[in-house]
Image 1 (cartoon, one colour):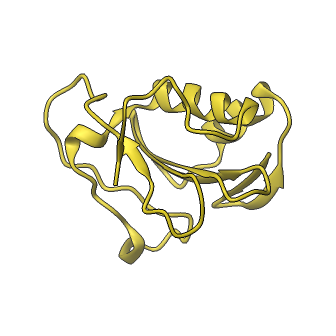
Image 2 (image 1 turned 60 degrees about the vertical axis):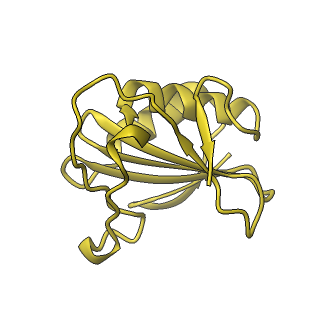
Length: 126
């Protein structure tokens, strides 16, 4: 699988390689990753500390899918950097589209094994 993040682009093949990359490539609390298998499907993983936000794109031009009602905690505002790293590129999705970072790690591993909409998340189509 191809991974684009703050450190550039690489290819990963195993769960351990992916988990290591997701946990290590950060700018402070921030992590941003674009995962793809060379086709049109991609999974974007954004991390800020213990909170994550995902977006799955099934094909180019599709607005994507985001998590829906997966956040178990309080309502909160969280800012996520995109792969470009610039604060001007930051996004702040609604709290109900957030999920715990550990759940996002599981979704990324699921996508590693199958380049389709991960079933472990309740998704909302944009």
